[in-house]
Amino acid sequence: MSVFRKAERRKAKLRLAITGPAGSGKTYGALLVAQGLGGRIAMIDTENGSGDLYSAICDYDILTISAPFDIRKYIKAIHDAENEGYNVLIIDSLSHCWIGEGGLLDMKENVVASGKFNSYSAWSKVTPFQNKLIDTMLSSSCHIIATMRSRTDYIQVVNERGKSEIRKVGLAPVQRDGMDYEFGVVFDLNTEHSVTVSKDRTSLFDGQSFTLSTDTGAKLLEWLNSGADVPVPAPDLTTEKRRLYDAYLKLFADDPQNAQALAQEAMMNVVKGKSSKDWTVEDLKNLEADIHNRTNNDLSQAVNF
Image (cartoon, rainbow, N blue to C red; front, side, top):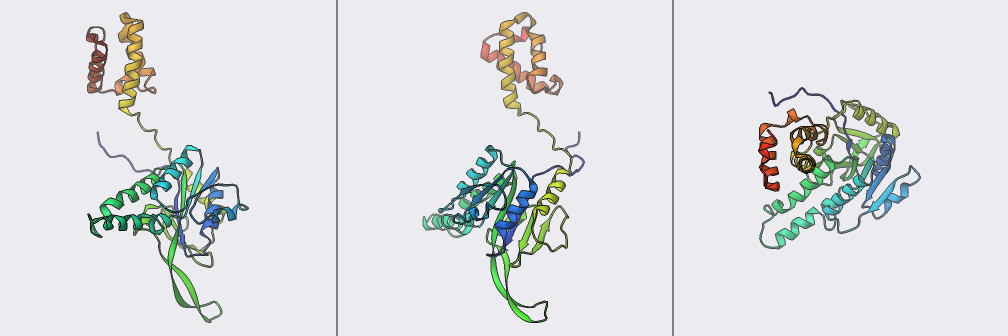
């Protein structure tokens, strides 16, 4: 049997990054998109409580993270949002756990200061924390919207009246290089609150210039939900076998004469409806051996696996 399968787009959760310089409207825009996605909204606020300033836009709950911006605080907050049943989680902002006090750059400098690692090898101690955060965001049951500050520069442009003027523009996001690649959609905001799309796996916004709104979130939600249903993963074999062992032992104790039939019924009914034919010969041999070891009885005579 081939290990490959036919490609198909499946339903998914949003992974959106919003980047921009100060004053570009990242938090405001993130809340509008979140409102369009629907459901309960949570925000991780690292901007000195500024997340509360937008409470008139929509209903949302907030968790403030202050320095030190230990990346493990972010990871715990993401898990807390999942456990509390939020549909959308805004991380505002993802830059602090990189460049802020106690963030990953500080962690790296502390590793170097220990004298055991140089500036290059110190990353071997830091990168696993960054990877854990990325894995936590990508596997989250919430829609994730993360804002990141952009490094800024000033350029001279000709405005709509034909006059030259100086404008502030955002450059690369303040995060580790390549962080924006981890998201399915990346919106870059300028100081006029206009969006440039630097990455868009949905193809909904290719070549467009627009401002963020609840309609942006609604369009994304429609696309995310238009894929095929995600298959339910097979039960963890170790966990399910343990459930089956316990069920079988009880059945054998209650009615040893009918243990074989009862064991087959347990396979059908106890293990999340999994048919006994889906168990391999090796699985069944291991099952028999484990039951034998736990009961000190030779059950092979009673059950012909």
